[in-house]
Length: 335
Image (cartoon, rainbow, N blue to C red; front, side):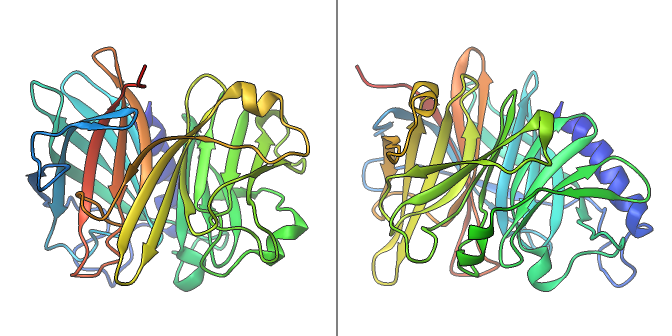
């Protein structure tokens, strides 16, 4: 469904902005050449695969000489026979789609990007500057996708139409307390709701904030939940667990220490029983600086040959000292 929905969405975006930008080279809709090199999870112990409730299923370091490649902040996947349809969102305001190729063991070995398109504003022009800082992506029909932005904090639902139509979801007034570069990074959709998370605690607070919008009435204000999480770890991604719960990814970075990544799970029962007490998602796994790790911001869940898999992609910030990593894990809770 991702390829169908994304194709429809990209059609509307392209139509709304009148085609590709004239000053881009190569053309914005041209395919990208991407190289992939296999990576192990533990460089000092290559045969080690278990990581908490996850088991490593392979990964690759991705690179490209194309200047459009990088800055990936969100990831969507849809399994096919021998590959995964892929949708990527860049924090410079572009959408890309292609495929992840898997080997016979189901490990990712290559990535192709067939097309990239700029996100457009309500005036039909490509987004630029702070307005283009797209962070979260969720597709919930063949004709609609939701994108969250930070710095200029907002959530837009794009409709497949020409000229472009976008519905801005109502943000709580407390969004005014959200930091400039600590905004709406996490976005997920389940059968009834759009979920959005604030990266770090709102100024003056100690807990992280999670909002739930009802798909049946997107004009209504969202329901708010508080999460009891380490305030030094920001929420960079959300994903539905297909059972009414959520997977969360948190990132920590400190100069001289490096990146640390936590994968957590919030169950449907916890959400249903929520009251005025902050919810406590369970820690599934943590990637630390001694592992193959970078600035992971995108997360997706897909079922491959009956196995539930978690994929992570990192944002290289277009910085030569950082890497674009795509890692895959089987979700295997410990007894």
